[in-house]
Figure 1: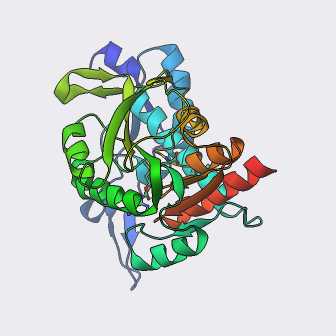
Figure 2: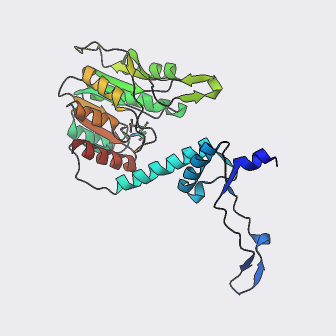
Figure 3: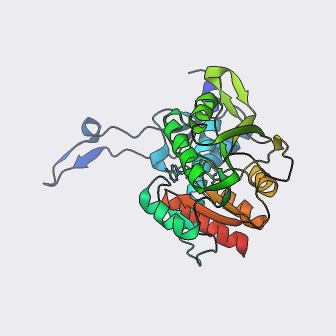
Length: 304
Ligand SMILES: C[S@@+](CC[C@H](N)C(=O)[O-])C[C@H]1O[C@@H](n2cnc3c(N)ncnc32)[C@H](O)[C@@H]1O
């Protein structure tokens, strides 16, 4: 191994392997025959500054998250951040406050039971804005289809449905959703924080499309600017948490004052927080009870 490589490898917290193992009858045998030593915890740290970052990250990464190979400093920081977020979420999950005024139904927005509950809260054909952020993976095209059907049931004529989407299958999504709603426009959410590198496409992705559909014809009074300068989101409570900026802009511009905003895949509740900040009525649905719990805690804090 070169001197350079020796200098850049930091070995952290390697446990001493036992030299012998004793079985239940008290017989001893060499441990090396039966026990594979755990892989060393290694982070490549090319500069002294990186070494500090590597040491800080190493303290946070739980044992079971160390892979069999060395980590780069970037990977180590990412793993440490995931762990910090997990701890924050656990803390939020035990923070059982009052139920907030904003109702969140735990369930699949496509299920009958969820819709029975939802119809007790809001009349079909009366919602002003559905603003939501479905999972973008290709396998979820059907989810977008169901979303459009759901939208045509709950929206009032002239009401809007705005959904985040990845850029990779916009064509298919629009085609599928147009079966139930009128395609209106694409609003560009310009990312001013971290952006995604799509190696396969050679694209540095600096925007997110917001797909805007309408039930029949848009009847809003306001003009809508189709580029929103976003702000970096806080991802503490949900890995996919979005920024409040675009939700607030769309709610303020597209949903009339006092109107109803519904998010059928509300995650940690960004849309709902934006709606109450803009004095609209908010309702959420979320399939993951942990995420719904965190959304309730966030809403309680926002209302305090
Ligand atoms: C991209 S995340 C939303 C994040 C949210 N915008 C935020 O800022 O926290 C998508 C959410 O949709 C939820 N979801 C996926 N399929 C669903 C379904 N069929 N019904 C209800 N929720 C669903 C997931 O559990 C996830 O929390």
